[in-house]
Length: 176
Image 1 (cartoon, rainbow, N blue to C red):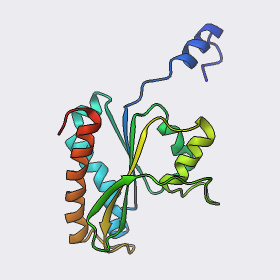
Image 2 (cartoon, helix red, strand yellow; image 1 turned 135 degrees about the vertical axis):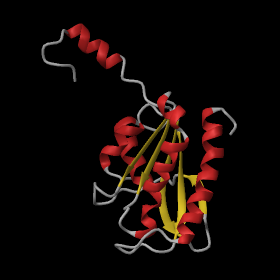
Image 3 (cartoon, helix red, strand yellow; image 1 turned 90 degrees about the vertical axis):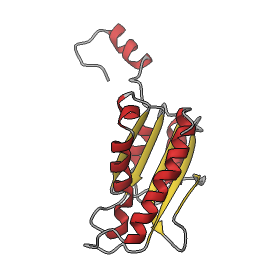
């Protein structure tokens, strides 16, 4: 919404020219105080170090939160590719990237949504997304409060960063 003292022409200009957003968005979640649940935030920290140029050039945006919330659907607007990143129980898998599952509607909570539920909110607000959406799960083995990241989690984080390098190379057209 434009400031109250702006002209109607300025309001139209603002509405017709939304601020530009990075075409690629990485949304991670996790709790740094709960062992391998920290893998999502640690993934974002690594991206912020490795992809400073892409971030500075507004090609890539990285965000993390403890949980995905209904408001995060707004961050999807204007994107070309989105990847959700979260720790998962390893069960022999170091990391895996796959298309986000389609979910109709959302759970009873609006402050703890899955990627599919977040996309359902997006569809309610804006219609079908015109961008691709993947989920990157990073395998972890310990999620207790006060635990540090496990050796398995650290190894799987490194593997996930390699998978992401290929993914983002294709997304940005650099073929990394």
